Image 1 (cartoon, rainbow, N blue to C red):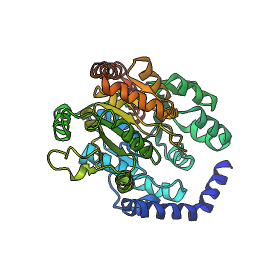
Image 2 (image 1 turned 45 degrees about the vertical axis):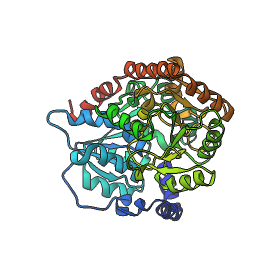
Image 3 (image 1 turned 90 degrees about the horizontal axis):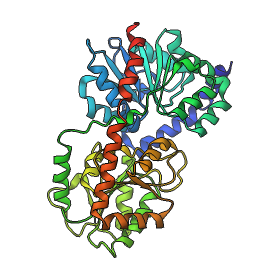
Image 4 (image 1 turned 60 degrees about the horizontal axis):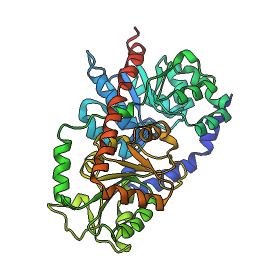
Amino acid sequence: MARIFYTSLLWLALPVLLVRLALRIAQSPAYRFRLAERFGGGGHPSRPYDIWVHAVSVGETNAATPLVQQMLNLVPPPRVLITTMTPTGAERVFATFGDKVCHRYIPYDYPFAVDRFLDRIQPRMLVLMETEIWPNLINRCNKRNIKVAMANVRLSEKSARGYRMVLPLIRSALDSISVFATQSVADQKRLLTLGVDALKVHRTGSMKFEIHLPASLNEVAQAVRRDWGPNRPVVIAGSTHEGEEALLLQLLAKLQKSFPDLLLVIAPRHPERFDTVSRQATKAGFKISRRSRQTGALDPAVAVQIADTMGELPTLYGAGDIAVVGGSLIPIRGIGGHNILEACAVGVPVVFGQNMSNFLEISALALTHNAGYQIKNADALSICLTTLLKDANLRATIGENGRIMVARNTGATKKTLELLIPLFTGD
């Protein structure tokens, strides 16, 4: 009954959904392509897939990457489909896997759209990354005897409270899921408060620790650094959101008094904001450069570079002296920080703010291992960056601590795959 009510609300919300989609298309033209897939259509029916992995956007796709890579190494290799909701997630899938997997956009949770989609792909198993609970999708999979698992599950206390409020709606979906692989003990406990069968819940750790950096990354990062200027200090601000760039630009003006040749590289989280941030930096009085247009050595007068490229952030972190990870510096609704592990993995000290609700265990681990700093406000960020910029030995020590921390926490992918293999092989 609750699911029928939910579906009715979905239909009532359709005009709002279409307006929102139109706004997204206006902001990011990539959304206009393959629209039929949003409703279960598009393309041609293909052979059945062994495994369907759903990763909402770039972050979830990155987390799923080592798992999918290990799936593809099985003998015989399974036929894998990856779905995302965003074009940036799609771009990451194509960049990472090429034609080794297939990509489609996941349909909205309307029964007709889900049925059209399942008729086309006929998967044997669905793996939902992190915490994606879609009642109609899971219900339709259950009716077709398609096994459903949740991997790399991250469930904050806020999300758990929200789910408890709609428990009659999601209870059936949770009961239909065969395996939950959680990032932490806290995530495991919160799932149990939703009535999930304890025998289905397994703490595997976070797959975000499974960072396989290209062998050439260090060499490429060194080349980037030479082009920036090998002797000038460089701060990389990754995955920034609106409001954070303004804070960082104000801070840059202050830091330039002590570090006149300081270069700030800003990598906005969303590509549609590249132009906006470029204009913002220019208006603030800084000479800027666009990373996508850089050829050869950077003009020493450039104080801000906009990293308007995709998939390059680990290399940029590796080329910098300090990484400041966005989504955490100011309170932003719906955002609880971003992954700090890419910076740690390349041996760069990482700085992040108080708003890390989506990465509580990882941020706490970084602090415990002395791999980074959590700052309270802009003044604290200024003091922290000044301290690090003045002390190369401190930067090296903090960076190496981060590298060691990442290396010691691998293994989640192997544990997760061991839970999943029986579901699609039937063993």
